[in-house]
Image 1: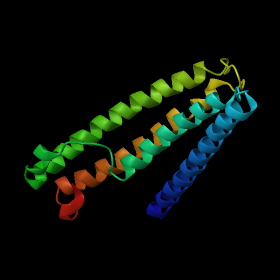
Image 2: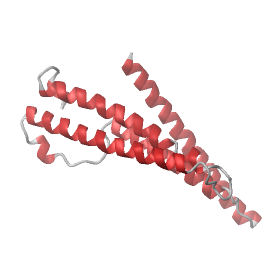
Image 3: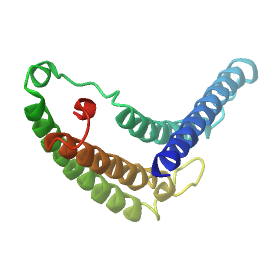
Image 4: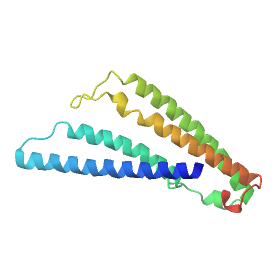
Length: 164
């Protein structure tokens, strides 16, 4: 059941990313056409596309972490015995959880401190834009915890050999 919920969340994030990317392309294209043919730019377009890019980066980071697609050098780790690979994976997962907790804390402080600060062209409070930081941080933390459990089970021989 938990796997189905997480798969649904991944599909939702993918759909959101597709919608955001499509909207960004349309807005940027409309701004280019407006500048070239109408000799006037859309003042709000740069802000809105920047906000969309911020959201896309954080949601993309969640998907990349879920699918183990972040860049990493694992040459040394792959040469270690299986149990040691699992031990390294557990340490790495714990460090990632710590870093994500710092991200959540900093993102929450940024979000709370930005409610009064409005974007110049759209007058959208930056607090709305920065809500993505603690939300995606929480998703990253939950995923890191799940990976920690899987790697710890692999360390103690409670799963198959592909756990680490």
